[in-house]
Image 1 (cartoon, one colour):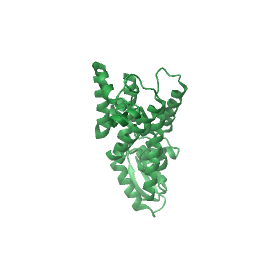
Image 2 (cartoon, one colour; image 1 turned 120 degrees about the vertical axis):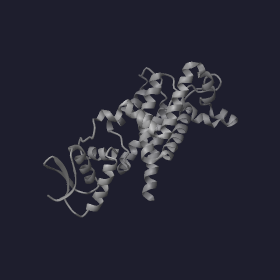
Image 3 (cartoon, helix red, strand yellow; image 1 turned 180 degrees about the horizontal axis):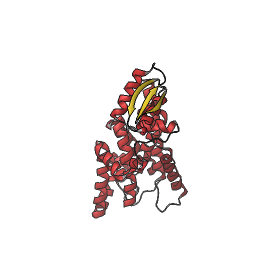
Image 4 (tube, one colour; image 1 turned 90 degrees about the vertical axis):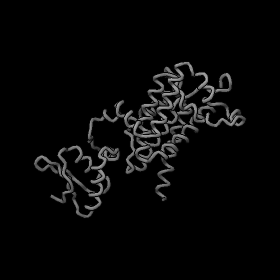
Length: 287
């Protein structure tokens, strides 16, 4: 029978762990014995490392790295229906459990509610981006971040906050609050600055663009590239989601949508997120 490692009452977790062990160069198979599904190692050589991996799996079986290993191995194994991963209640619940994710979430909601109750003008006056020549004189550098908190419609804020709640919380849980803070600050600054370069100011030297979408594209690129460069870290995105966001980006440039898209902010955010992931991966490799 080989070398038994662990037995499960259900088939899915057994196959999920077996696929992950195989991805870590530990050959493993699932054998059904009575009503149990036993993971059997082909060799005793890696038994101790396999036990540690099994303990980590039991502690956190929903870690995305296990599902990613199954996808990479061409298997469709899930602990729960795939729709559960993107349900509204789960996204909001994950965001609430991640402090910085929830702070940004709450600020965007607060700014939007104040705006629809008649305070948009003063909010815009203090948060919207201004030309760099003006910023050099008044030193109101917070405006590089300010537009990220302003949204212009229900669809706008819901779309952005759903993605932020899902991807931001994923980064914060996996790599910590400091890493998400760095991604947010850098991507918001770069995306807003890039959009300012390709926009014309309106009255009062203000740029009339806003939204968290530049940051959303950054966290998407960050998770996407880390899933590719460092799959063992447990961050990943299904190809279907990456494809959807890239198609949405292209549609913005095609100018066939019913809304005006901040294409420069989206592109700059995506590039900054990908580069941050590459830099983190490279630095980790050297260390």
